[in-house]
Each structure stands twice: as C-alpha cells, then as structure tokens.
Image (cartoon, each protein chain N blue to C red):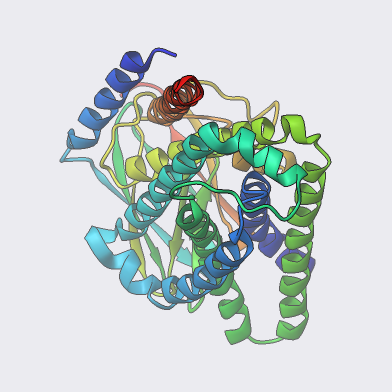
Length: 113
Length: 277
C-alpha cells in the first residue's frame, strides 16, 4: 500500500477544508407551509453556488431532503436554516419533506448563465 | 400509520445496521456488550438532547449549525471505526483463536472499547434525534395520533429486527474469514460516513463541491429505494455523488487500509523477533 500517496491525498483534502467557499453566493428563499413547499419549483442559475434559506412556518418540524442534491436538514417548527447548493448543471433536482414524503418540489436549473 | 412506520423504519435501520456490524466486528472482545449497550443508552439520551435543542442548533452558525454538527459526529465515527479496524489488523487473528476457545479473555493493550461506545452512540444519536423529532411532532398533533404512534413503534421494531438478522447472518460466516469480512464492512462504512460528512460540509458552504454529480445512477438504483438506502449505509452508495464526496471516500478508504497494513506488518515483525529471542 502506498501510504505516501494516501497522506498526500489527505493533505489535499485538508487544504480544501481551509479554502473558503464563495462569499457572495446569491440567496434564494424556500418556505414550508402546511407541510408543502413554496415555491414548488425553484429556478436557480446554472454553474453558480447559491444559498437556500428554508423557513418553516408550520407548528411541525420538517426535514428538507434531496437525494439528487445530496442534501438533508431538519427545519424545526418556525425555524429557519441555510443550505448551500450547486454549482449545478442544467436539469431538475427533486427534493422532499422526509417527515411528510408526499410533499415534494424541484430545483430547476436552466441552461446557460 | 403505514407512512409513519416506514419513516421510522428508515431512520432506525441505519443505526441498526451499523450496530449489527460493529457487534460482529468486535466479537470475542470481552466486555463489548456493556460498552455497546452504554453507547445505545447514551445515544438515546443524546438524541433527546439534540431534538430538544433542534431550534438553537439549526439557528447556530447562521443556519448551518446542524450540518456542522452532523459533519463533526460523522467524522468522529469515522475516526473510531478506523481505530477499531487498525487495532483489529494486529489482533484479529488471536481474537479468532480466542473465540474458538470460549471463555478466554483476550490479553491485549488498549482495546478499542471506547471506540465501540462512541460508534454506537453516534449512530443512535444521529438517527434517533430525527425519530424523536418526528414522533414528537405526531404526539403533539391531532387526530389519529395513536395509530401513527403505533406505526412508529412498528417501524422501530422492524428496524431493530433487520439489524438482528444482519448480525445473525454475520455470525454464520466461518470464523476463519469472519474478521476479514467484518473488517471490510467497517472499512466501507467508514468511507461512506466520511463521504456523508463531506456532503454536510459542502452543504454548510465550507467545502467546494468539485463537480455536483460525477455520475447519475439514480435511474439504475434510486437512493430512496430500500436497497439503495441499505447500500448507502453499508458501502456509501450515492446515486449522484459530488467530487468532494468521492475524494473523501477514496482518501478515507486508502488511509485506513494503509494504516492497517503498516500496523499488521509491524506486529508480524515484532512477533518474529520475539520468537527469535
């Protein structure tokens, strides 16, 4: 086993931990109301990292989850959380409320900047 | 009621599978039952605390507190799994011999018992806090809540049963191969958890994605399907992995493997020298 190679990779990973994310990622809002998402289709630009602010207006906790986006976060009742997503290729990315799986929505990324 | 059962089942099964494999991997280590049970109890207490403070955790670090907490506990679990495997790489053979001669205590230095405790604690706490929050919401809700709570209980029992089957299945593996099988299982679980941690750090905006979906196999095997989810826990299957997840997966896998080889080689070397002397 090439341990020097492994430790080089590890160092590279550490370096990336320390690299700051893009500071000025544009902000998009997503609201959870009556356990559903508003808007149900959220359009964001391609190849751009964005901040998604998810606020839950219900009395029940919700879990914003997306296999397409590899995202998972509990949004407490009347709470608000922040999730970074992207940069994404054009396409449709499904998300859902894991505590109420029939509630779903899509992040829609249009082609071109 | 069925919907509730399924949601709870899916959370419980993650913890149950990890505990089953850890129990298998630590077979023959004296006292492991107490430590694993301790981990489960502490994990339940931790789950309650995380659920109780869900609001403040979510609001911490400008709304990214939960992702950071998840990443931290996942990385702690990766460290403990690594420690366990590295320790086993030098003691596994003697342990297999001890298991054969029932009742013998293993004479070894620092056994990774704390590792067992922390791994179970983390697995139970992470999934448990979501179950607690979810059931809490139901209990606070209105009509039909008894049926839904019953569903939650059914999901919990089903999840524990799957873990039990997994454990019984593991025990069927011949002792000669047993610890190498559990070793590989633990290795892949650790790599998968590291990839999850990378996802959470990226979610919190601390790590770049390095490409958002390197491939898309969601049409082939959806991650939300039961098989997809089980493979997600066992080997870290991700239908649309980001570059950073793949990088963490690979680095964790190679690092633990390298350390296992080094420790095993050193151990064999000392054993040979001891015999010569």
